[in-house]
Image (cartoon, rainbow, N blue to C red; front, side, top):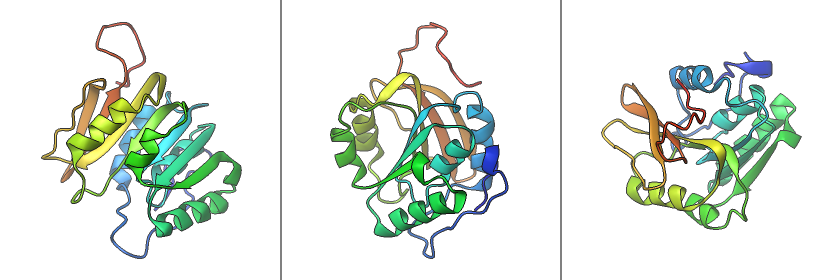
Length: 190
């Protein structure tokens, strides 16, 4: 897997040896990089179901000030730490070995402007996950939640407003804002 944008563009990252961790495809990361280009610099990022950390590391490369990587897999945590080391960004990322839903219940008032959510497709209850995301009160003003999901799933939750969606074959990316639709001029990617 390769970083596609920012100061680490072209750098290769370690990926998992098994298929239980499914990295986001290059096409999807390319689209996200273009959509989020103006949203990332200086922001705090939360990468849930982090896997090898590709999305949070992309954000760091694009100028995010810090990324928190959450995954319950010891293999994922090793990969995130190794990829932070490869990029020389150990101080810009914090790996947290935890179940995502448990983590969301205890964020300690922390807020992030960009939250990536890329759960295992086959074992995720998206209704429950979206409810946990909406109830976590984790977004800073103007914040976005980026959810990767199977195309047949339509994730929704009270408290999160769908801003944009894009299909990539079997997978879809949906962008949500934590703000109500009001035409208030809040930053929405276009």
